[in-house]
Amino acid sequence: MPGTMLAMNETLTIARLGARGDGIAETPTGQVFVPYTLPGETVRVVRDGERGQLVEIIAPAQSRIAAICPLFTRCGGCAAQHMAPGLYSEWKRQQVVTALGRAGIEAPVAEIVDAHGAGRRRVTFHARREGIGMLVGFMQARSHDLIAVEACPVLAPGLVRAPAVAQLLANRLGGSNKPLDLQITASDGGLDVDIRGHGPAGDKLRLSLTEAAERLDLARLAMHGEIIVERRPPLQRMGKASVAPASGGFLQATVTGEETIAALVLAALPKAKHVADLFAGCGPFSFRLAERMKVLAVESDKAAILALTRAAGATQGLKPIAAEVRDLFRRPLLEHELNGFDAVVLDPPRAGAEAQAKRLAASKLGTVVYVSCDAGTFARDAAILIAGGYALEGVTPVDQFRYSAHIELVGVFRRPKKY
Image 1 (tube, rainbow, N blue to C red):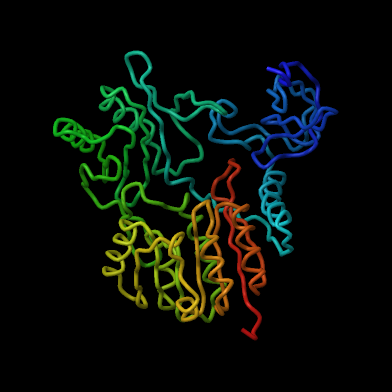
Image 2: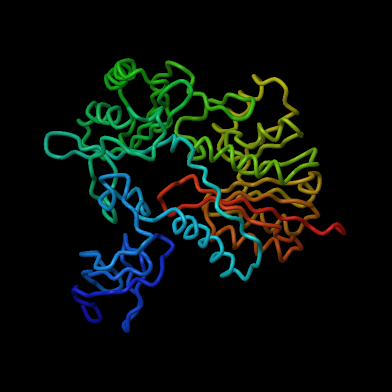
């Protein structure tokens, strides 16, 4: 095709890291992105346009360290096992600084908080038929092909059996010849599994899966969120509450991550007495907030709100928690509703909370604590809040996705006292 560059072998010097963790080299014909390389390194690559495949590290950087997993560079789950801790932390922090800068925002950005803890408590395995058997594993780097995984060093100890469990369940479902996703979560009651991609289960399959759940000693097994069998409640501790989230429902990636973010949220609200928790999920912040103040929890997912209200009814020593099912993208809380609270906490998905930010900007609410998993949409929404009279007091990056390019953050916005 006209304009397409043919693959060629080149020697490059890496200038800096990109947002995805790729090394970036500047050349007369433009930038070249080379995965698994570091600033200052001289490397030989096979180049295809702006992408480079690493062939050889001619001169390694001092910030290069040995990976902890033998599958690193083949498995697509981790991007940064080769980075020394100092470089790694600054790379992640810089993502937040860069996103704010692009939005024209100047605000203090704290050092990154390590919230990996014991490891990730949830993992998704993919399963595909390969010949006469089912191949179960993770996606290969920059590919839709699978790589078998027997163990993963970033997972919490409660998931040590997860690869074997995923393989056995995939074998039971192999007759459908459909690609499957098996989400496995470590809970206080044991492994909680939700299978996607198969479609409805008939009576024969339900019986087979129930037998498998017994054999594997699972807490709960579901397909597309529909429970096949629940042998024990798959409880997650959230402050004083023990919550059984909806099957496949949202959870923070690590226990330490959830605790760290919640502590930052609470620290920003020392005097609040009545708070709205928007995009509340099943209550990771609501329950901790309710130890000190009244809470309205708002979430579009009915199953999440049901899990929250059930746990709230069974938990002693909390201030009142009211709950509302509401799509905050289509029906954000309006100014007259917001003005009745001391503060708002919001933790939207990656798309951010643009509609709600506009209503907050038009309100007289004094404090907004914004938890985000996407620095770009956070910066967009932060600009809306700042234009509406808020000051961004500071941002704290929180790393609960170790070795990946993902970063969480907590931003605190306050209005001047005249409001």
